[in-house]
Image (tube, rainbow, N blue to C red; front, side, top):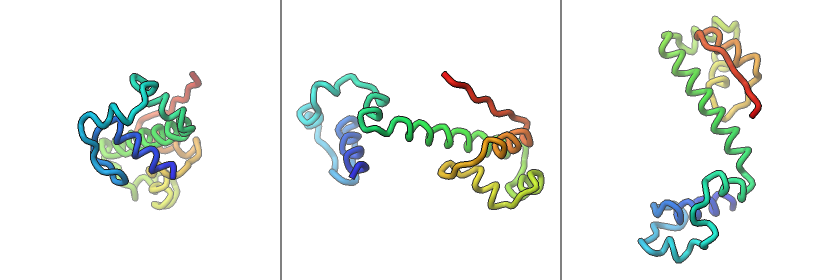
Amino acid sequence: MRAKRIFKRMALVRNTPCTFYGTLRHGEMASRMSKKNLGSSIDDFLKKENIFEETQAQAIKEVVAWQLAKAMKKKKISKARMAVLLKTSRSQVDRILDPKRDITLSSLQRAAALVGQRVVIELV
């Protein structure tokens, strides 16, 4: 149900085709959207939907997985070779590169070190 609400609001904001609700015509957006939402940021929207932290964590995981895969490609290290270097299985390397899975910080640090990178974590 939450996904339907999000898609509906995204369609209202972007005026684009939406799987659940179809395409909104020009002008419909302003009439359906309340005045209090005009000018608000995506962060405000996500906080209002109570999914800000979840969305932010997922975005970080996707960026880290992308950066690691990019570094592996640059160093010409295959998943199989990475598994040998990490002294683990190929499926574990797949888990490290899968942003939908949770991995330990030590696994991420070891993988990053093999491609000449380091992990920096900061509280702000």
